[in-house]
Image (cartoon, rainbow, N blue to C red; front, side, top):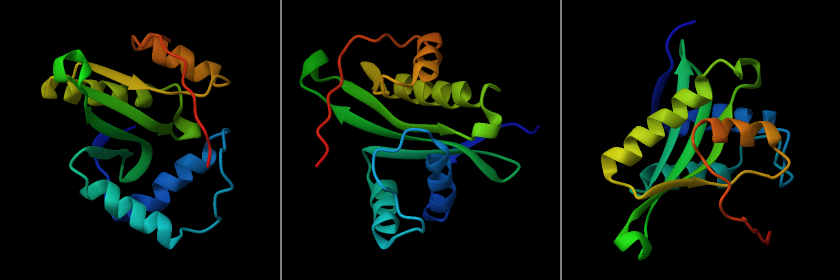
Length: 150
């Protein structure tokens, strides 16, 4: 297998990103079967936002992982920068091969380069394997996440 190339996503990656999301066992919304104009507008907005990085990892030209990173300046941590990581997905067929860990290390390196005070993420409490993955990477379950779907 060739090396994983991590790069910023572009609008043309939308279908591949959505395919990775569709492989996930946790579905919070009834997602449309085909790419919508709302999703096309969303990816354009995300990739043009200076406070967000939508990343993809590819092997031999095929997108195999993705993550969305939001950079948030906070008043806490002496005006610190927080790195919020969401929507981490790795192709189901390639899990357990270090792809997700490589993607997360890439994000951590960028957070350190930017001088971020911390990285944080949320994960569904039913995703026990994901919890173990994040704990192996040094994340600690320190907070209770709460959501209200609208």
